[in-house]
Image 1 (tube, one colour):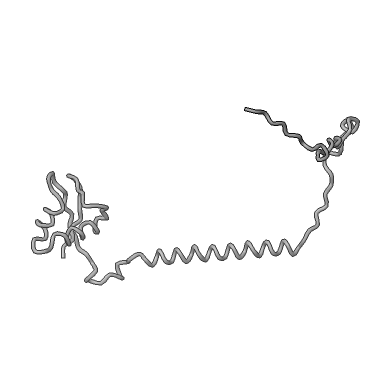
Image 2 (cartoon, rainbow, N blue to C red; image 1 turned 90 degrees about the vertical axis):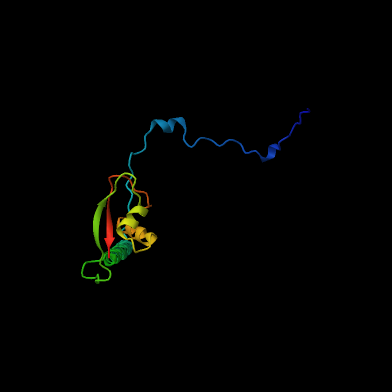
Length: 141
């Protein structure tokens, strides 16, 4: 390996700058606080207040609008017709039971898949797995 010497042009190097303060100036303290005069701008204050007021009104409108949407999505008893109303009975799952056997037992003349789908929807289940001791609501129509 060979070493290469790189020469730096010295005419491009600036001399070191002198310190901003001399040692004598360090002994004399400058005043701790200087009085700064701030110019009050009433139009800037008015614009800021107006801007925040607009933001507040828009956000309140969005929140209230979202609340009305959520509230209208809930069904009340008066909104349901007789065809939409579901009557049900509770059944406790025993050892060895599954939804298919329950569907065959409680709805023998219906398609078990449809009855199982209604059971899952009525009980807000994420899947069709049931355990012994669970209470399920079964639709009766």
